[in-house]
Image (cartoon, rainbow, N blue to C red; front, side):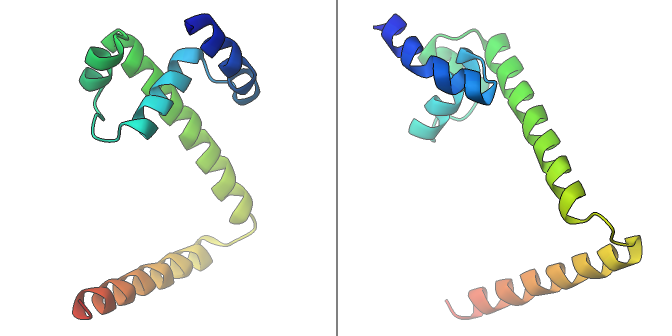
Length: 105
């Protein structure tokens, strides 16, 4: 069964650049949100804790790299002062939404 499962996962892992352990951990977290620590995953899935930690760290680093590339693209050509103003507007919008949400409950 395990071989069949891994064979089904192989194309997805290859396409996304994920190792099987990382894919398994992501799927475990998606299917079991109440078990969200490396210790939980290690105990339940019987994956060594150091492998869980390594896989999660690698996924986070890849995620951060993608986010940095995304932000570099969308903010390309903006002056620092323009970005500062933009983020001030976004923060004010967030505060406005938060205050309206809490007062309407």
